Amino acid sequence: MAPLRVLVLCLFSGWAAGYKQGDNVTLYVNKVGPYHNPHETYHYYTLPVCRPDKVHHKSLSLGEVLDGDRMAESLYHIRFRENVEKKLLCHLTLSEKQVDELREAIEELYYFEFILDEIPIWGFVGYIEESGFLPHSHKVGLWTHLDFNIEYNGDSVIFANVSVKDVKPVPLEEGAGSAVGGVGVGGGSLKVTHTYSVHWFESTLPHSRRSERLRDYSFFPKTLEIHWLSIINSLVLVVLLLGFVIIILMRVLKNDFARYNVEEEGGCDDLDQGDNGWKIIHTDVFRFPPLKSLLCAVLGVGAQFLTLATGIIFMALLGMFNVHRHGAINSAAIVLYALTSCVSGYVSCSFYTQINGQRWVWNIILTSSLFSAPLFLTWSVVNSVHWYSGSTQALPATTVLLLLGAWVLVGFPLTVIGGIVGKNRAGSFQAPCRTRNIPRQIPTQPWYKHAVVHMAIGGFLPFSAISVELYYIFATVWGREHYTLYGILLCVFAILLSVGACISVALTYFLLSGEDYRWWWRSVLSTGSTGLFIFVYSVFYYRNRSSMSGLVQSTEFFGYSLLTALVFSLMLGSVSFWSSLAFIRYIYRSLKMD
Image (tube, rainbow, N blue to C red):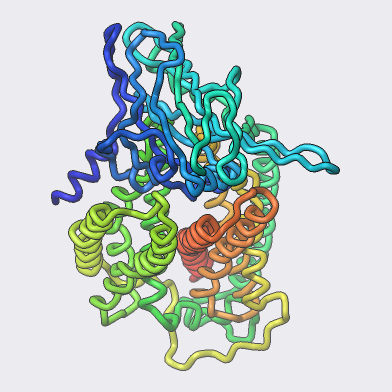
C-alpha cells in the first residue's frame, strides 16, 4: 500500500511558513509558455536566461507534476522585509541563435511563472508592439529588469507580483540587434544585464485569507464573473421542465392504470392480450439484453464516476482545494479514482450475476479496463507529443511508475474485491412479471421513436441544463481561472442528474407505449449521449471561445475532451438506466391483482 500512502500525502501541503526579518524567502522559477496555450508549458531554463551553475529542483507533489510544474531554485535573493533596488542578477552574452529564440518566444506571447511561498507570480518575457500600416513597425523587446512587489502581514507572506511599469525593454533586432543602453554588441552576439528590485508592503489581510488576494489579482483577464442570474435562469427552466415531465407522466399513467386494472384478475401473466400499450409487453419487458457484460461494466464505471464526482465536489466545499495548493485537485482525483474502483467492481458484478451472467471474471476485467484503457491510449498520444516538443506537461518516468503502481496495487485489486463481494451478495433479479421463452414481435416504430431521435432529445436536455456552467468549467480547466463557486457547481450537478433521470423515464415510457421492450441499452444511450453534446461544445469552445492553437495544445485539448465526454456518457448512462429500471418495476407492480 506504499503508493496509496504517497498519494494521500500528496494531497496535503501549503501550511503557513513563518519568517523573521532578514530570513531568506526562496523564489522558484517554474515554467514558461504561450499565453493563449495554457497547457503548452516548458521549463523556464529552456530559455536563454540567468541560471545557476547547478540547477536544484524542488520536490513536487503528484498534483504539481501532473499540472506541469517543474520548480527550480533561482538566482534571485529575496530576504523577508528587506527592500532591494536594482540588484544585479547576471550578465548574459546572447548568441544570434539565442536572440532569435527569445524573439520567437516574445512574439508568441510567452509568459513566465515563478513561485514565492506557494504564491504564483506571472509576467511576460518581453514586449511586442505593432504600429502603422505604411510604413509598418514591428518592435520586439526583452524585459531585463523586474520589480517584485511583496505584501506581508506579521511573519507571513500574503501576496506577490512582478511589475515592469517603469522599465524600458531592451530591443531585440534581427541578427542580434544594435547597442542600446545597457546592451552591447560584439561579434554577432548581444550582451544583456539582468537586474531586479524588491519592495515590501504591509498588509492587513491575515494569512488564512491570502487566497482572496490572489483571486482578485488580474494578470490574466477576468471572465468568471458572478453568474447568479444565468444560473437562476437555468434553474427556473429546469424546474419547469421537470414539473411538466412529471405532471404529464403522472396523468398519463393514472389513465393507464385506470384502464388496465378494470376487471383484471390474477397476476401479470393473466392480463388480457387484446390490449395494446406497455401492458401487452409485460412478458418481454424484463427479457435480458444482449452484451450483458458490457452493459454491467458501463453501469459499474458510471457509478464509480458518480461517486468520484460527488467526492470531489464535497472536498472542494470543505476548502481542500485553493489557489495555494498547486495540483491538489489532480492528486485528489487520482486517489479517489483508485479508491472508488471497488464501487465499479461491486455494481458491475452484482448486477451481472442478477441477470444470469456466467463469465464474472471477464466482467471484472472489462469493468477495470473500460475507462482505464481509453485513458492510457489517450495519455500515451498526448504525452508523446509533449515529450517530443520538450513540454513540462510530459510526465517523468517516476510519475508514470507511481500512477501505474496506484492502478496495479490499489485500483485493480479493489475492483476485483468489489466484484467478488458483489457476486456473493447479489440476489435474484426482482421482476414483477415472468418472461416467456418466445419473444414478442416488435411492431414497426414511427421515426420519432428511433434511437437517434431519443439520443438527440435525451442528450440535448441535460446538456442545456449545464451549458451555462460548462463555459465556466472550460474556462477554468483550459484557461487560468480559479473556480471557487463550488456551491453552485453542486446545485448544477444535482440538476444534471435530475434532468437525466426524468428525461430517461419519459423516453422509456414512450418506447414501451409503442410495444418496444428493448429499453435496456436505449435507456443508457438516450441520456448517455450528453457526452456527444459536450464534445461538440468543446469543439465550439476551441474555435470560438479560446485562442488556443498548435499541435501540442490541440492534441491535449481534444484528447482529454474525448475522455471527458466518455466520463459524462458513462455517468449519465448509469443514472438513466437505474431510473428507467425503477420506473418500469413501479408501473408493472402497480397493476392491480384482484
